[in-house]
Image (cartoon, rainbow, N blue to C red; front, side, top):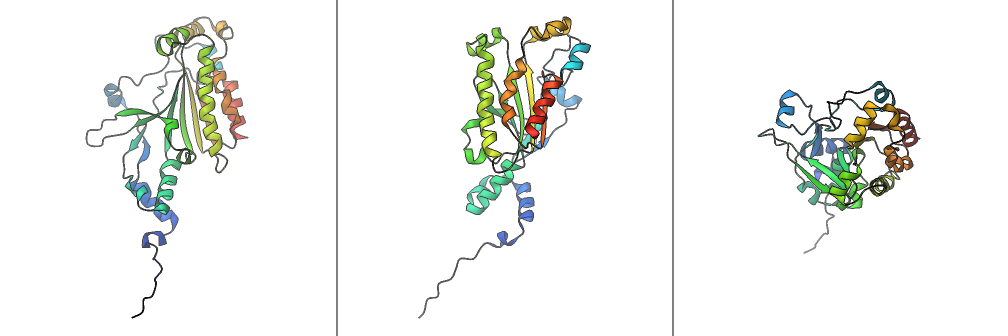
Length: 266
């Protein structure tokens, strides 16, 4: 009796073209989508409001010099549709293909503050139309997965000295220095990822929650220069290259935003 060794056959699924497999993965894996905020949604989520108080009317100075000071909510409407992550445990080939699909095609919302970098995970419950959320340590992900991310929405929150002492027990120059360090840590992750493939979309939103400063800027425009340049905490992003679609909004002057966009696209 003879025994003939047979080579293990590849599953028929992998004989399909990669493009077709990616379409199948897109229907099964978690994915992001954008939910438009209509009137009913805003009434159910009152926290989705403009970072700049509406009781302080904008001035010509701010509208001409800052990229975004109007009533625009920082909520970007990006939510996750939950899916089946068990596909990553099938075999090695499917694991890498699913990881490329899940991390490379979806948009990750990142919140940066003085002492942390958080992944803002918000998902939609279709049965009840609710959108719970949870903040997760972004740098806790494995670097192999972080290197696959190609689409970012980054919220950088800068606070005044009083709020900094209350929340972080830090004030004065230490606040922008700590925030800049967190930005540098995120940029180092992005830079290591762009060595293989460039970033596709990168939307940076600088939120200056110093309402007292906003009030002074709106009432006495000339004080803008004397209050320093809080937007320089975004300087570490200048090391990024070949970003296809960079966008900078928030409490950032037009000239600085345009210069930063050109630097990242070069």
